[in-house]
Length: 486
Image (cartoon, rainbow, N blue to C red; front, side, top):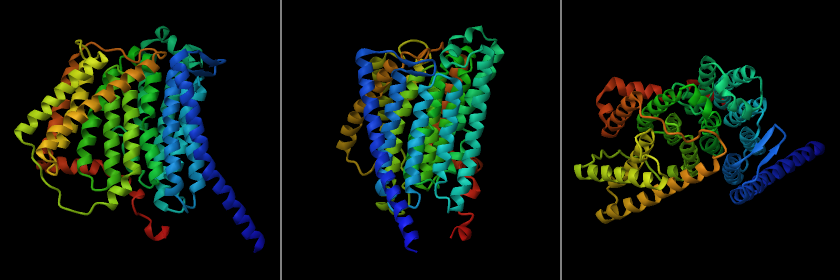
């Protein structure tokens, strides 16, 4: 008995050491990344180690962001998961996930890139089902893992097909040699990589894995929504020249736009905090994919960074939201004509200011649609403020301009900064000529947006039910094994 207690104490001591050490290690790695990033901005050195590793501004940017998120989340988890049986395992998985993301943007060999992508999915599925004693968590882990393996399979097919056709396994040589490959090869490879990207970002029709991942502890959910789903933006940026060469950008525009609208619809139907956040994430990933489809991969990366900060905060503070709220009948607030004019004016001004600060949207090209997305975002934020009955008239006059200027300024600053750091990547910001497909879809997108905001869908029962069913998680991840789990 004494020997058993001694072993248990020893295991507990080691677990405690791991729990304390990993957050510190992540902060140290973040600090190192940040120092290297600042050095890169000043000196612009060329760092490469043989043909396997290539470090540039984009690598340091993503490395700094992901290590920052992981450090914050693991530090939060020290208290949040205190006493949790699998606390040490969570910390280790968090660290391994971080390394897999850094590896994705660092390795120049496609086999190592594919291995990094695969490990990202494995680590995340383990985090989702980390409580192995909970049957729903085990089911969620298996269910999400099937999706992640599907994404890895399609990515492997697309990348290895290009590698064998190009007779090279180095990403840099593969990208530079795209002009010598047949059009059919480019299209097939592009479609495979697009499927891998939209699976990981939970884009429709692959969205259900994210809705079914609610068994993950809140810190794991924060890491998932702030880091994992954004991985598709990184992947598409790495293969931007391929998407241009295969003329598949319109496909990204349509898929992303439809997802953004549908997910916004489904978000309005949710009553669970995490499910609302999941639908919100799907919508934001749709916007990110749209930006890629417009030829602005730098804007997509800026979007995923800002989304990561925002969504990590929402998840880590979601417990406070629940604790400080109580069930109440939702107020039906109808926006007034004057408020609608204010929203419209702020949206237009926001687009103009963004265009002036970034130089985008000032020519007759796809940059116009990028500023349109900014206008919708600013207009929606303004709408959320002016409809609040708790704010006085003076507050409604003062607050929107302050938020508007700071929001546009931050987004433009982030956009310009990301553009600077991504300059070593080819074709990450190439405006496209305006096409009929873009115009038609732009009109459809705006119509769908206003139908959502005006609540027209609530008067169409079959549409309401369709969206409700569409936003349900996999049934075996929701209290299907209560008696067995207990």
